[in-house]
Length: 129
Image (cartoon, rainbow, N blue to C red):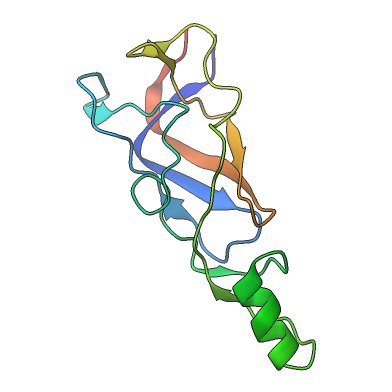
């Protein structure tokens, strides 16, 4: 049995974010459990991946500047996700318009060093082939 499929309403989290966020799958004609199914290309900041509250990565220029201004005391700043590559690994068998479906075991990387994972997939009963 495969990993659960990810849909809109899935909860995602970033290793440098202060709060989880809700994934917004790109609207497609394919639905799973009455919710839009997500694909590995759903990485657009703000549109698909909302902010995770405050970011604590020193690789993030705003966090580094605020921390420097605070004499080295880590100063988290508002999260602005920046994902440059699709979620991996995605489903090897379930496709959404020719694109691998996003599964609960997928992850992606923020350019500020965070690892974004699926905390709750959205689909409770449906798994990838």
